[in-house]
Length: 412
Image 1 (spheres, rainbow, N blue to C red):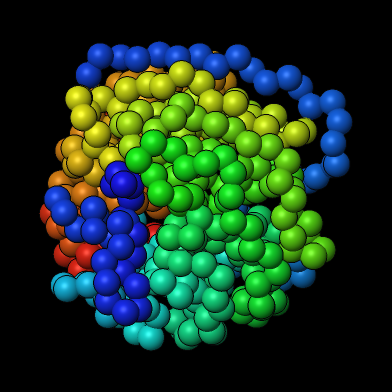
Image 2: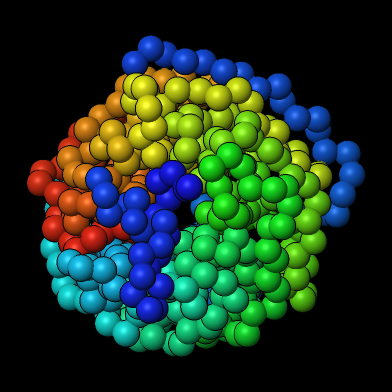
């Protein structure tokens, strides 16, 4: 039995594990991971930009920086459209970058179960998963919010997607079938037919799991590898992406302790360490990363600061200066704040802050990192916090914004 991930309800209307669990219901810890060996070989690759949204598509003019644009900024909210009380599409809103106040502006209909959202590096196209048994990914041209089309992911219940820093490939993770997919992106931002699909067939599922459950698919900061986090097999898979063909070659596997249930990985901006949220056993781990080989090495399990039992930790967020990390805890309804030390090799638990909602599924910074947004699935709300750039402290910015079954908030 999966612990806390929330599988989607299929197109036939039956509940699956991810969504079923999601609809239900401080001592400092320090761990240092030895630095990985310096790269000595391997194909050369251009370093990725510190933030993917800053890397323009080749040949395209980048959009103006969101942080410098005057007036309200856009906010997109992902939801489930096939559950009672859910939304009817991607929620459209605006937010004040100074106060954090959110105001709704409408809904983009015609996109089914858009539970996770990602932005193209040039800022012109939004992508959403369609978390259903017959999984898909949809491209939306912004700011006009016109749907460019949907492509099948070849798997069930896609729950995460990201855009390769080159802007040419969309990476998606199928939770229900434990597979990862690659789609090409053309010059307009539209998606082409899938170029690869890999199912995680080994190792065997971890304790209590009936199969693989791919939960995340991202690109390493150096741009040389793509990594897939699989909750069902307690494994993070590293792949080499052929950027001319869009095909994947596995190069390494990183195994957590059995039953950890890894869910979400976030890199330190230095590119040599990453932080892994383990959903099932309620722990986090600092991982060393070797850019030359793509090998990830998880360190010791650390506390989430939420006490005994599992609190279904959902997602890490790391400041671009590499000083602080934040963890969303769904069962505890809190955000854990960590100080980062030793150039990324150390996490020190500072405190936990009430999130002001129920079941924080996803968290995101505004482009200038002065605000942190938390999408609260069970309470159907988005909480906003002011972020102190010096101390990393969080301060709630007024009352949360009501939004049906809010599972993802993407501020631009």
